Length: 536
Ligand SMILES: Cc1cc2nc3c(=O)[nH]c(=O)nc-3n(C[C@H](O)[C@H](O)[C@H](O)COP(=O)(O)OP(=O)(O)OC[C@H]3O[C@@H](n4cnc5c(N)ncnc54)[C@H](O)[C@@H]3O)c2cc1C
Image (cartoon, rainbow, N blue to C red; front, side):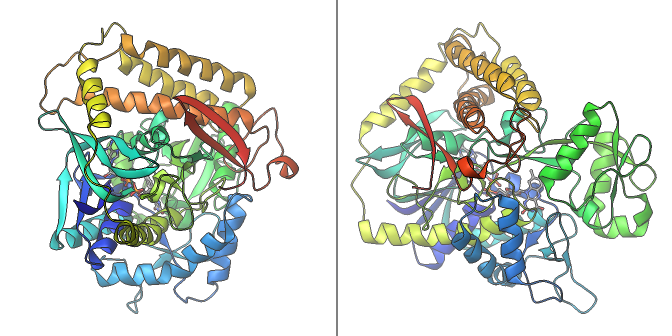
């Protein structure tokens, strides 16, 4: 029996697993892909921490984070995150993260949008990749058991306490029950709902968040989805904020600048959207930075632009559009990162730890994965030690999940779920995107509910058991539909504009009704319930 089972091998999951191992716990880490392939590897711009440079302070970091959150962050937790940031960077540095350096050997820092200081530590524009690889290298040296290519289905919960999970072993299609005294879920966000219009990897389908609401957890603030201002127009591939941080300019088709490029993301994305809706093209221009600077500081951006858009940013401005990038909502957790289910903790993008509120600041998410990921791992081990094991997993959940997987093979497959998945991505981008209104949101809600009814008429064409991606993508689609409903219900109920949630029909922030108020969603007997209120 594991003391701790971590679900997800991104920066949050690996940080949790490492912290638990440092406390001598028996730890396993389960994931649907190899850890270095997790989406954390795509992070480019940097990880925030005030390291004592001139013109910045921890107080400013806290203030910037709170301002960007538009009253939906918890000040004490933001304070804890920002105060622990320098220690987190020192730890990452110590275990070997190859941060870029200044001429005098200090960790180099750059300014990202919404920050009043140069506080994002970076490794060229490969920050997430370098951090993730360093964490994974470290984890391989520890006695952590890796259950790679295992697909989480559900959490096993009895009498309000987590006992483990059910998962499919992807190599042979077997459903397994895995017991643990505590579980940390770190499965990433749900921006995959905007398929075709997101910077996220196709694996970011919110599986852990959907499993959490089915297990009795509360989800909160699901309507808050951040749109990154500068994705390549054709592919949606991200061009990092570090390009604007370095002096990149946003231009319309007439070559005019129309917004302060370093404003918070919600404001820059909305300004670009307005231009695009008005029939303008929008470009990111970094030519004036020069080839030597671009190759030194933004090498990945140049490669991505050439590869995905056929444009070399050294010579031409990059055509861009805003796309879904980060999901602020997620699994509601308490100060110890525990969900409503005892022993089940959540960290990273799948959790809502009330740090980012209505709009995340660039560089704060990687920080959260490391600081809160480690805290979640420590607290989970403590929980396991204090509460022990409740014995083996009863067969009920396991039988249910095994029967479900077998039944999917018999679904009629009359409706192509891949076409529905693409359709939902388009619907979400147009109607649950940067600018929303009640008619559009309600229309998408009824389309989503219709798709939920049609699921048994969808299904899979491939009936094989070995690495059946058709099956996993179908299960992911079911999770996406489950979460789509929670996003829509939250967005319809929030009759105001706040941060990343902009309503054409309610263009003002309504502090009287919604200031500090969170949308909460949970399930009762399989039915979605929701209300607006304070934290639990
Ligand atoms: C292009 C891009 C650039 C970014 N740049 C920055 C930046 O510069 N700075 C910053 O702070 N943030 C940045 N972000 C955001 C940040 O990278 C993410 O929020 C963060 O890395 C999420 O880490 P995580 O560990 O929570 O999840 P992830 O890294 O997404 O890992 C999730 C893990 O869960 C596993 N998993 C998912 N579902 C299942 C399942 N059903 N069964 C088993 N395992 C499962 C996955 O395989 C994966 O291992 C960026 C994001 C993107 C997309």
